[in-house]
Amino acid sequence: MEIPAGLRYSKEHEWVATEEEVATIGITDYAQEQLGEIVYVELPAVGDKISKDDAFGVVESVKAVSDIYAPVSGTVVEVNQELPESPEMINEDPYGDGWLIKVKVSDASEIEDLLDHEEYEELVAAEKE
Amino acid sequence: MRTVLYPVHVRLRARMTEFAGFEMPVSYQGIIQEHRAVRTAAGLFDLSHMGEFELAGPQALDLLERALTNSAARLVLDGQAQYTLMCQEDGGTIDDLIVYRLEAQRYMLCVNAANIQADRERLLELNRGGANFRDISAETALIAIQGPAALRILQTVTTIELGSIRRFYVAKAAVAGIECLIARTGYTGEDGFELFTHVSAAAALFDAMLEAGRDQGLLPCGLGARDTLRMEAGLPLYGHELDRQTTPLEAGLGAFVRFGREFAGSKALADEQASGLRKRLIGIRTVDRRSIARQGYELIRNGVRVGVVTSGSFAPSFDRPLAMAYVTDAGISPGEMVEVVIRGRRVAAEVVALPFYRRSR
Image 1 (cartoon, one colour):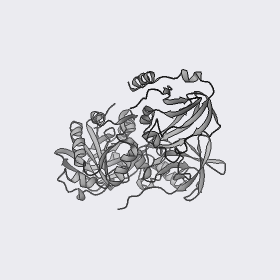
Image 2 (cartoon, chains in turn purple, orange):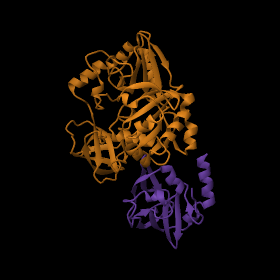
Image 3 (cartoon, chains in turn cyan, blue):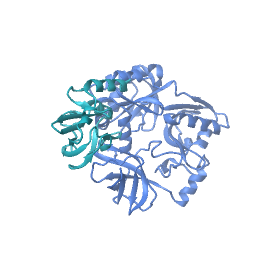
Image 4 (cartoon, chains in turn red, purple):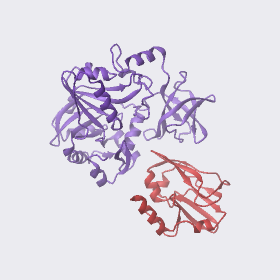
């Protein structure tokens, strides 16, 4: 299982990569492993506002439905158009082609509050217990 | 609780889940891959969580006749088996199960793990004649091999001519040197076998089967694939299509209710048969081919609630989601459209006949 350095993580197993004011958001390798094969994705539209800790989308595996929670607040500027047709990309490349949305962040301090990769590793290790 | 095969699942790196109080494998390599293995080659399942009872003695048949909806008296040959249900007096379903006639006056029942205790209590309550009852769940392991290659694979590790065991029959034989009851039954919509054996030999049997199927496309399969396979085949799962508020007739299982005799629930079921069913099990598929109607989601037609989804999932054999649902409106038939409420949105779905999947013979 991969937890890249350089990304920030939420306790709900989303990752965030920030460039300028835009945050790319996805779910972590651990999250996709727990879910199993993802067969359906529901994402917001460009221009939608999302707020930290609120559900902004849904991923469904064969077995279950899971909400995806916003790790930061902001306005959606881009949505991964490939995912509705190929939701399995989240399993295959959670930190790459499986990204979900890009958001113009409204409060940069929210990013600082997220976990770094070492803290997230500890969280995952604790959950695996 | 864990089945005796728990260490095998850990070794095979299964993803585990809780089911009926047992830590069971959901999948090993992936539900979709395992599902496809069973449709095209074969899959191997640990079903040791399921319950087994032995009923014996001169009163055994009488107890089965009074407790179950199908008539065990119709099992006229040793080794014959039948699907059947246990009902409350009001016709609500306590469990669905398989009865195997091992010999005259000796039967084995295979029941759902979640209902072992309820079934045992019900049978003992009805056992006025004093049939010998033994709960052999703890000492019995159950391993299923299912799929078009199941017979070929199993035949390489047993000397009994498997072609001689017909569908819904059971025979005693050694598999890889291990004493088993080999039943030609299953829950996947495919041909296959279920092997009952003593727990002490279960791990050796599971490994021998994996080895026998190594080059034949056999995969170990978890409960995830078991669920998608049975749903495609239109087979009910207790807790979804069957419960104490649902009769076998409503579940479309009238073929397993033998009227013209007295059994627990016979009066209520006959009344319902005469007066018409309160609800009916149907199949649906969302027309966007993506949205998954899950258990508990409501069905709407012309703005009115007409039913509720009991099982729904992505269906790997069809590459689209499918679902089963109960509807209260008798007019709803295949080809018609309904709406299913998915997270507050109404999504169009087409009614289709069950089962979704029927194997080609």
